[in-house]
Structures are given as structure tokens and as C-alpha cells.
Length: 76
Image (cartoon, one colour):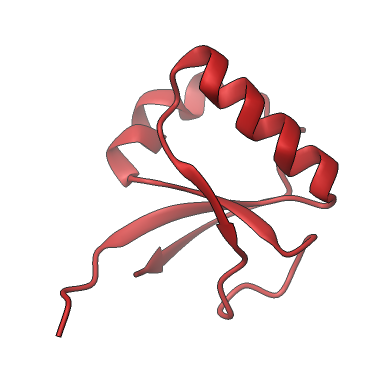
């Protein structure tokens, strides 16, 4: 069985917001990827950005909080 690890997941209100976020992350070098919204989270458009907690710590102070809806920690 695969070992689960914690990830930070950002949810979005709209698919357009999620796609814009992905583009911005690629331009600025924020690592992560778009994923289907995990079942544990019931919000948003159905897409989420998944990143490692270390990356979140590095970037969280420089990210515009109005772009995403919620921040959650999930084990995947």
C-alpha cells in the first residue's frame, strides 16, 4: 500500500479562477498541480491546486488570498 503524505489544497470558486491560478503558478515558479477537488472538501468548482506544505510555507505570504477560496490540508 502506498504511504500517504500531507498536501495543501487550495480550492476555487470557478474553473476560470483555477485555470488562471495554474497559469500564474507556472509563470512564478510555484510548484504544484491542478487536481479534482478531494471528497473531504465540499466547496468550489471541482478543481483544486495541490502543493507540498513546504511550498505553501514558502509562498503563502506572497500569494494574493483573494484568488483562491479555501486552504485545506489533506492526506493523499
